[in-house]
Length: 623
Image (cartoon, rainbow, N blue to C red; front, top):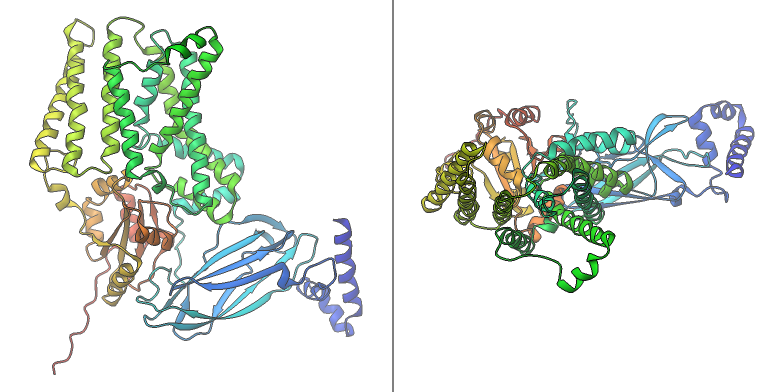
């Protein structure tokens, strides 16, 4: 290292002394000139030629964007803020270059800078008129340094590219010069925190995000799973053992969730779709049904007699087996969490997928998983302390856990069943729950009337579900409202491919209308929350009255669905993208995960989507 630094200094000094005339010597006192002069010696064995140190290629990716890819030699780096992209091609306007998160460096000459090592892949969006294939002249300027102490002068490369035919001008890019107005989406802010923030701050923020996620419908179903595991230990389980079992369950879930997420992001896959195949959902639902039937006493699940005999003499082995089973159940439960995509998850996956920073991205995922599991630790430990110690109550508790398991199975099957069948599936645990709760009132107790009221409520809800099944209702939370929900929702137009999206955006731009594109899936819980609570809000509906509303249903995850997700670099629904009346996407305003109506309406206003009136095309002249 010292030899390389000395060589760089000596070569710079020689060039400065022997440059032609005193003017060159004077110019060499400027840092930029010193770098330029020093670069003339880059052919020495100590430093690579700049074309070798920074190999650049430019490739069109569709009609409206270009991919720039640098391969950076070992122990060299590029500055993000020194990269400039220009074009003089008529009718083409470049948008803001989309860079992945980099590494923060305190540079001796330029101050605090974002730099890249190894490889850099950046997307350059562009806007052009619809039409056939078109040539594009691109000039890319960049600057980098060697860690040994040499900074190269700015390098400019020109490319003559051929853009494919376009059906819509700039249908998937941000408008050039369109400022974000200071707005930073949650996922972008969290991604920046992962890359640039301190490790402690990153872990704390993502732990807090996981704690909030723990109270969503994606994580709450794991409560009965953990409670059943604790109850299965018998009436004499101690709080300490209940805590240890709960921690094992949470760690099994967190490790599996982190590993699966990191692997999926590194491979460029949509993490949700990996676990939403119908056969996976059916198998998992059948597992819950089997557990429920055992809770009702139809059969007993236990270790085979021969193996039980061998383990009975070794307490440690028995405990190890118990903890191993709990950890395995936690690993399986990680599949449930994948139904939710939030800004924190997307931020971590983006960092892993784009910057290759697996360690910090996986650390953020693990902290978020522990945050999601913290309420489970509290509930699991409390269950160990509060469960009845003996008596007939234990049979009732077991049956109640069986009802919860059946509700879990219905919740999972709701992603693939028709609406009316979904209501019928939820009616089964509701009616059984009423029967179990009513059984508790057969003997005098302190909470007898509370239990009886809960049983009556469960029975009424089951009856409403059966009524809704016959009446054609589709919402288990509103089984009495047949067809009302569909009338209240926004009038989305379905698109099934990138080509359809381009045509719709082009048509909206021609009419001067904004566009909202909603990525949806039947198995996405947060999508249904947006549908039920946000899209039905009067303020949101009024703001979108003049916008073109498009929906990409990616439930099937077929080739067209994957192409749409890849077009936007989306890891899964719910994700909402906005286009202005100029046909340009506003990527900085993308909404990921569930968002309340008031906040969503404010995003619409800032993105320039709300209140944009369509323009009428001029009527053709009479013949």
